[in-house]
Image (cartoon, rainbow, N blue to C red; front, side, top):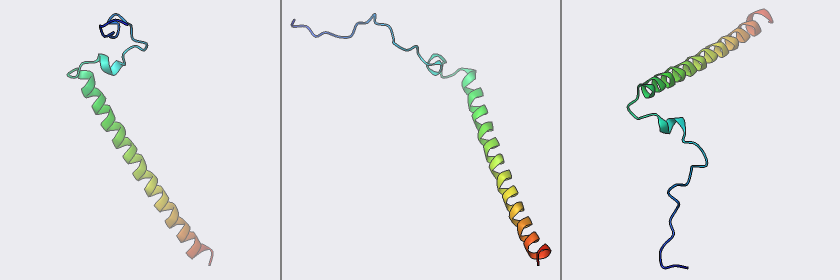
Length: 72
């Protein structure tokens, strides 16, 4: 053992390539587009959930109607 500390090899290659997110600069237009798409996807998910709730409520009301008025 020598008296000097051994550090990491500065010429060592990365085992995995950097992610695409790391390669794109923070002020790139692509970041704004990505944020816009995320907002639209979130809104679409919310709309789908609201439609599903309305359909469920309609089916419950239809079931009540059939039970009360058709099968008495």
